Image (cartoon, rainbow, N blue to C red; front, top):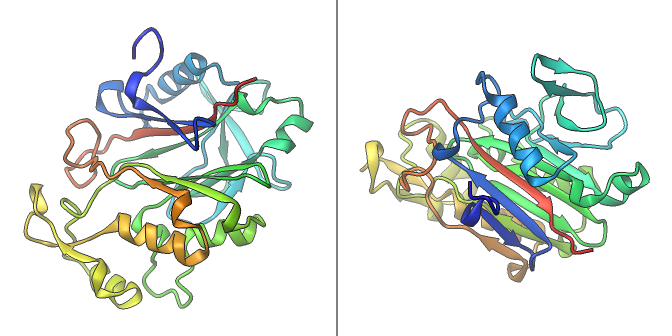
Length: 275
């Protein structure tokens, strides 16, 4: 990181009202079990001037947790491990959740300014869907790995985005979306049982062939196209969807599970409101 911040790793979205930070190999691993996880993530929190980082515990669940939600059991991560909730720090969820949502008006009722909170996720190929419902003043970030879009054996094929809209009363017509970089069709070869299931549920047009890396020549999935299709299907205007087409598997800058990495990158969204 530079003295001024994180440079081009920190991208303005939604007309500059929000920022999305993406840290990779150069910044170390953000895997929650890494011995330096707290030190690294808390260092980011302090550098960005945040009181809280909300980091739900990902597990391909399709559930989105609310930072201020009633009944949501939360704890903090400290230098020695788990801690009780306090005035500042890293908040995680007891129940697994692959999305986090923050209603900014609810924060202000608790005396917390919107610019003091970020939502974080840790990935190694999967993109995230970052969103903002302007009327509800709801900021959210969703883990958009294939397992959050498609689960073999599910009858309804409800996606994580479809579920956050329904569960948290959002209106797709009021939502702006940014899809972060992730593994692209060039590297996402899959010669397993998931591929035919996806094609059957979504359509053959989402199939492709991997052209790079260890899985070159395997059938691949255009995950970004799946996500874009799902956002449109649920009702988000095409004009309100922005995507980063960078492949984080082959760019050399990010940890990648497909390449055998067990480490994790950091993706963090936060308001960037000008006072």
